[in-house]
Length: 466
Image (cartoon, rainbow, N blue to C red):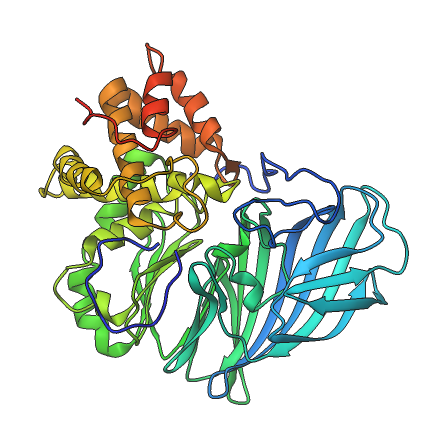
């Protein structure tokens, strides 16, 4: 979900066991002419003809001037004969040099597309090593969902890429189905802490600068790639069942223990409900600035100072962002129309956590939001809300209601067995609504066609599930 730095305010909407590594995405985009759309919701994002398997990103960032220099080494394989190919990159970043397989090549950079002409035709199955050096003062990309991407803080920066902001700071194939492994090498002024996805491999201090190296092995979508830079301190919170860490300003340490005090219990509870936590570790970043909404990234979540005020008023959002590690980050939509597979599941996790810790039950929350949904009918179905509405609150709540209706239909045992099977079968993969409904059929003794038709495929709100 897009994020912006804002004054603290109350909002209704949330944001937004490791298996075999390197699993190939289950849904490849169709190959065709360069003008073909990979996703009708973001027709200008994503690229055809090849698949990236790895990004090595070397970043040098000057906080005072918001100056970023990026050297990207991209490893890819062609799926068809390529005379040229493209990457997504905002034109606010200036390209200085491009090489393909060791040779300097021609390129054009217009309308947020970097089009590259290799030294010769690349045959199907051909290996590509593309090195791109670019620099600039990155800023968010403006679009239907506001501004997304690289965003300056009072001291430092954050990345909030969903859905199409990754190209604001590095060249990429910016579509969620295009998962890859990453290595981040971040050099910034020594007073500042730098965090990126994955596990910290090394930290080197030299001449007033610190270089941080992170390795993200599990395949990751571009919108989940993230770098956080700020005047932070590191706190180690736990080592089991997975390492849990916090990165935040010193002034917020005491209130953090209140607002995030039950986070370790959340991880244990969700691991029982949804299956083993899918990544090697989990971290929480709390910025020194207030943020309108928190953000998920793969292996960590980002909250604003307003979410760490000592009131525990944002605990449902803590649950929401944590749940995205299973639903959205490990198991990721193959097309944006299926956003309910992320947000509906994370919203339902809020309700499950509430019931677990003695608050309202999931059924009470479902009843509460059913009345709100009934008071504001919509004209599009949950399975295809349209690009302008895919981050609207009704998508989150109706998605959670759909899961509650399913749970009441198939029973608790089958429902939670289904969720665990879902996160296991499609771990690190890409999915569609049809994948979920097909899998669910095996956990029900009766046909679920009517349920899906009522809750997913028609705009009208069905009767409250009983």
